[in-house]
Image (cartoon, rainbow, N blue to C red; front, side, top):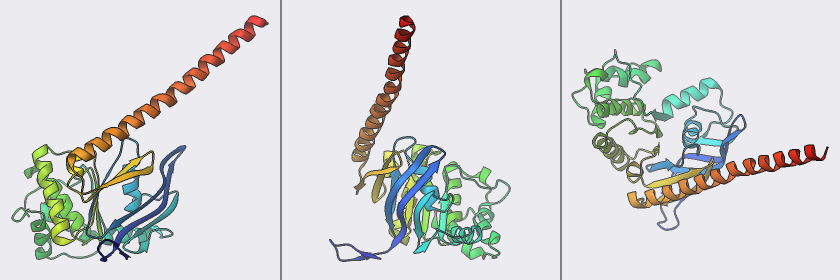
Length: 278
């Protein structure tokens, strides 16, 4: 628990990352990330393609193990947990929503929502499942199968499924990426309400400045490192920051790609010169 100097109020850290590093062969997807996500807040994570956004989310949620560093969820360190204990922690304390809804088409909305509890050996009550669906605005849709629901409604079912265990944090990897603008706005409204009304902690990866502007804070990644953040973001400020980061990344990529080409040309010239002198 930390205290905010400006307000003197205590805040609880839902997720803490320290020195988080993840290597994929020769690529550093994450390179020493330090971040805190406070309870009851909504954070968006953005960055150019290949910046490490999804890797960050997967390591923070215990879906992937970091090469080095420390992850704490609700005060529990994931470091050193065996697969069974890590599975239990993910099941009980972490919710995850993907861009694809990952619903089982043969099951009703209620059955899809109840699935995590059944896999845990619990028999959820009808009231519990109905309340979970009502929480995401789907009261009365319990018996509908995914094929009978719109894309936005399917994503709401997926979110209700993630929330049924009352997780400490809900992670979303592009949760509105497969939705049209109107449906995306509805889902974002719902996520915002979950934070404001229920005190849910949400960490969301997105490429959309409109989606990011619904968060309390936007964290930017570049080359696996934190490259700044925005508080109380607006669409215009998020767009401007992303444009600047993408321009910088493209410039650096172009410069690095030219360097080997120049070296190769000079090397070829040297070889030609040597051959001529022989």
